[in-house]
Length: 257
Ligand SMILES: C[S@@+](CC[C@H](N)C(=O)[O-])C[C@H]1O[C@@H](n2cnc3c(N)ncnc32)[C@H](O)[C@@H]1O
Image (cartoon, rainbow, N blue to C red; front, side, top):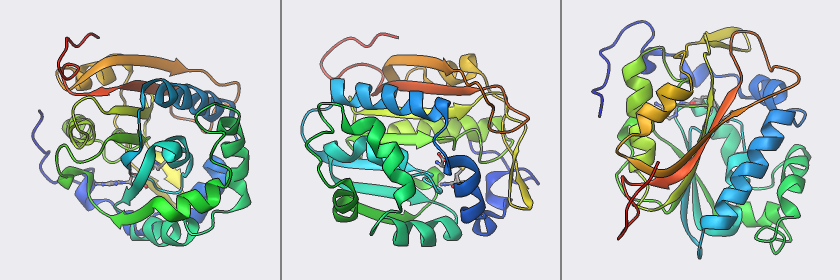
């Protein structure tokens, strides 16, 4: 596992996370359902439907202003932790999970037709019942605590330090119990991103970097490059989706990659 990078102007610890403009980010990224997010939702929903047993504890790390990862875990969680470092995002999330806005209906509709999701007749009430929003740091996550997890556009988008990307991936995967299914998404070759009037850094990673970051800590890993007809912004090269299971090997069995 990589050690935490020392402080520098691009390190995670010195970014102005509390000034993250949640409303701008929400409108810009999720105001309309994009084709790449739509594909990610379907692939993630199918992965969890195929691999999840009963209900357990779920976590979405670095939730920001995105509720769709949480929605993909909804049928499988009796407790669902939404965790983010930015106080602006946490304040918004605490209000939003109580009665989420109509914007997310379009996202739930992508899942509602799938067998494991159709019994959830009132996803808005279900999320309000199971969700707990916590302000927290990915680098301080406890180990082996959750049974299912998601982390979307976080590890590569929290600093420009490659060691912090690798450590963030490891912290996310290792906060799950061995065997737990997870989904993680990444912006490929991102050079940083604008949120309102502030620019946040990124690490320019590709599929090979993602694969390397999971070596020895995850198994049954499937990595997909997600195409789009209309990029979200300039300065990146598509999205990467990883579906897999925590732990080097399946509990009681051989892991494969
Ligand atoms: C590019 S946004 C992604 C938000 C959301 N997951 C999505 O899919 O759009 C990166 C998120 O990482 C969060 N973040 C940055 N540093 C973090 C840290 N050390 N621990 C937890 N979250 C962090 C930010 O507050 C922000 O919400």
